[in-house]
Each structure stands twice: as structure tokens, then as C-alpha cells.
Image (cartoon, rainbow, N blue to C red; front, side):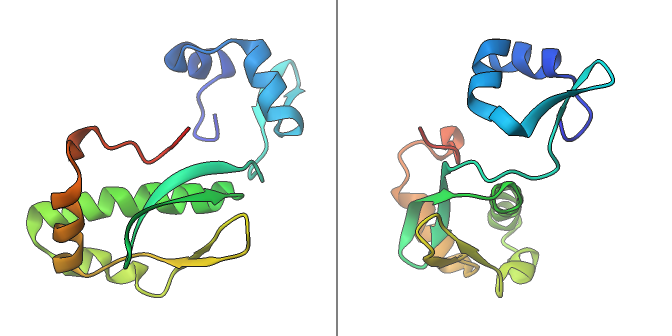
Length: 132
């Protein structure tokens, strides 16, 4: 919705109901001028995967900005691995994500380590960064 889709479009795409959205998004979803709008940021706790120096890890994020950053990083990791181009990941070398417990996590940017991690994933093409 933050990119312009309506609540109806998003719910239909995800196979969810309006009751589910209202119950789970709470104060982050409100009606304004007859349209449902979502807040610019939120503090919902969501489990996500990240590539770290320790391998593939699940962390709980509290920030929509962090979730967005993780998603962009995952896309860039796939590009970097396909092109064998570490420069794609340079912008992530100093970024840290703070999880719901206050622990800092850094993105893995080394191609060798990322290739190692990819080899441990049974079906990398079906890897979901959002965990349940």
C-alpha cells in the first residue's frame, strides 16, 4: 500500500481478508477521506532471514525500514551472485540491523561467503525472506 496499491488489491493478491488486516495492522491502517491508508512506517515484529557472517540467520525486526532494507539487500545479493560482482554489495558493508532484542546484525558482503551459504540452501530459488 505504501507504493500506491489499494487495500483491496493488496488483500486480494495475498489472499487475506479485511478483518485479518485490521486485526493485525491495528493503528498502522486507518481510513482517511474514505480510503484505507497505511502509516509511512511501522513497528510490527516480523521474522526475516538475513545473510550474516554466521550464515543464514532468522531475526525479528521491528521496523518497516529494516524490512525494506533487508529485501533490497536480498535482491542485490542475487544480482551480485549472478554477475559475480562484489561491488553491488559495497553499500551494505557499514549497515547494521538492530533486531527486536537490541542485538546488532551486519550484512554479509563477501562473495565467497555468500556462495558458501547459497550452497547450503536446498532450494535457493524458493527461499523466503519472511519467516512465519
